[in-house]
Image (tube, helix red, strand yellow):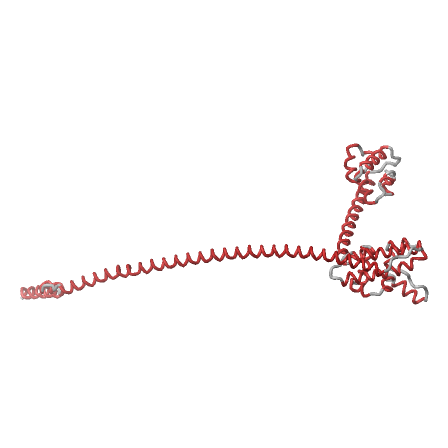
Length: 358
């Protein structure tokens, strides 16, 4: 802000918030380049047309000095970092708020989400915080000062982490110790309610906060606060109503969940039945096809055996016929002894030659 204030000092008065100031400074850049065309963008950032118009008019009549391009680049990069950090902080605060409303709604309603989360973190857990007495909760976070005071035999601290609560800041200086002790007592009650209740609600935290407000008014004006018994009776009645409503919603959600689960199971069962039927049909078709194939094979086997048997019988009959038909003697001799006849003929010729030579 101080860096960009040398260039555009009037912007600090129009936009006092730091994160918004960084967004506007990043958007404007050099104030001399700001014109009517950029008015819509300013309205989107500032979310106020009057502020956007005031920024435009102030830029025209500003008494700031000129800025160099290098300084402008550094300012833009630094503003981007600040914007990202502010967005991260907002997201973290939202997460902390949602988590504390679930874990410790009464404590967060009494003392705030940030201080309640610090107390739980310092104690270690909500159960440990619920086990602590009020005197320990009062000085939780100021252990060094406590031990130093005990060592030097000085005054012990009056408050620790609960000092960051708005109640102690609003109290007068003479009443800070008294209100811190009372607030620690109520914080202990709220933490025990959150820790050991089945359905944690913020009803008790709101009632305890009202009691602390009444105690502050009593210290300032002397008006007597309500008794704790009356406040707790009212809180119990309201808490029962809230718990009944929460249980009713949970039952409705459970019924819807069961219905969805039942429908899903029915759909799965139907799909499984269809798959089983399809598989049965396929197996039946396969069995029928296999039976038909077996029948065809059985029919083909006897035909083949008959066909094989017929040529065998024909061959046997032909052989028998050949064996039964006797050959004539001469033909049989010729067929049986052709070589002997040739040898005899050769011998006869040789004898004739020998006789002729003699």
